[in-house]
Length: 184
Image 1 (cartoon, rainbow, N blue to C red):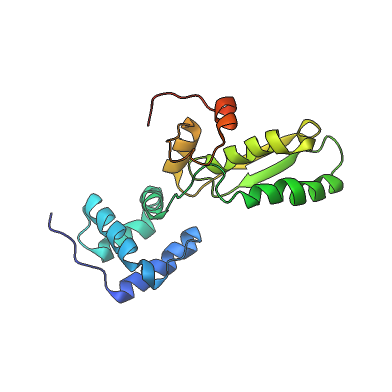
Image 2: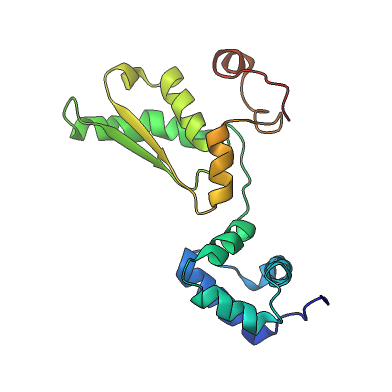
């Protein structure tokens, strides 16, 4: 099958609007190459003739499977443990004290981590609470993790991480919460 032709500016704008309505993800014009490349890959993978036929498939396939596959391709999952550590400080020292003042004992505290990517963020929250929040033994805490990229959620469930993902984890926490498996 020949390489599909590049999408036009009008098609790019139409796609951007559609994708934003479906996912809440917005691409500015500086992301044009990124979007074009991934669209081109999906056009080829679905054996669509061109952008127009692919866009029809994307919009009208009832299962939504192609839309999910494209969404997985369009998301960037830059993550590692304890990324932007100041957020964890804020959670422990500012947010949780306010929440616990408004709740009665026995009520659960739910923390929604979204996007969770491959799990580093929700696991970082759990470790932070266990290590740094004095109220952890007094409250029933539930951490809910979600992401628009279904493929990356499977990686989160597996819980296998590379050296790059754990580069900011202090040695004592690595020993306490992680098991070296030999997988990359």
